[in-house]
Length: 119
Image 1: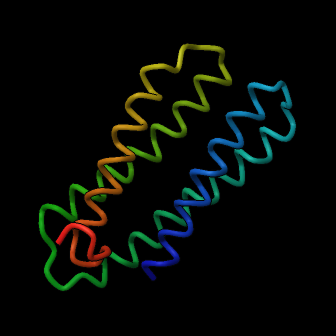
Image 2 (image 1 turned 90 degrees about the horizontal axis):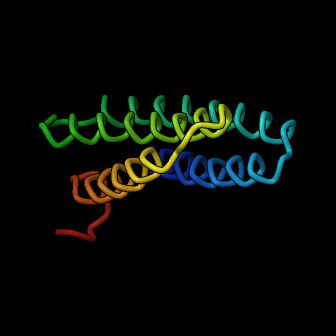
């Protein structure tokens, strides 16, 4: 299930940048379609994350932190696109998005179900 989770968030990040570029190039209808597909991937990320979390034998604070960071990452992706759509500034949300994304990935790799990159 870990591979399905990783695949869904990688595809979601790609869709996020595609939606951003579509909106900036003025293609409103393709932007809406990609944005809706991205929201579907948010749900898939959360579902696969719940499945992974339910299989954890020893649940620690790091897992809770990872879950919170993952939800914040999804929230910042949605905030960036929402503010962009409304014509409001997005710089702060971009910064928060990148910081939270990097922390989420690093913590996910560090945890026992992650890859043996930081052990």
